[in-house]
Image (tube, rainbow, N blue to C red; front, side):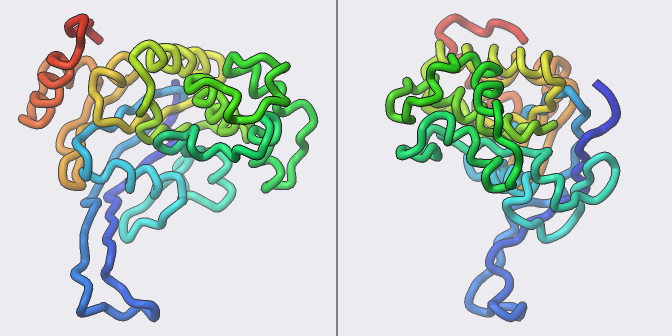
Length: 261
């Protein structure tokens, strides 16, 4: 762990406010989905961002990744405003990432696709990325439909890693996996963090899923972060009613009981 890799300061996002030429559209009521969101994330650290559906988590993920532009506030990388080149350092893995894999591509082509777009050297890149996520090099010639659900998840992570990012944003990326596969992917991510020094922004509505991975926990409600702090402290003594409800829901859904954090 070290100095802050990422700092988000008073980030706001409003949809539907402006027309084609920048004028305010009277027919479309502006919808504010992010309100003054602020947090920091250090190198090699994991911040879990949890909250109910519609709380603004995915919009925040897209803004941090540069897929969307925030309406207000700022995003700093290494203490300076994010630049276009920083997009390679921050990779977003979408919800149900297996659905984003081109079915016509081989595994090697899927993994190398970001390098093709960036016109960067590809020699050996696919083999290295596949090895990192625990897929055999012999799988490079197989197509996406030939992999299991858990293997496709690993393939999506390999594609994100091929640009050698410093931060992975995982937006509900465990969705659709059973509990066994979720734990396998979580274990993979923990190992990659130790091996590569990656920082993670984990976005989920499932508090139990991310509790075992997070150094810091932030809870979102209606576009705002309503509670954040060291994960163990937030989970042991939550201040907000929403946080308590999320903890209770996690306990009730766990077949094995609350296993701690």
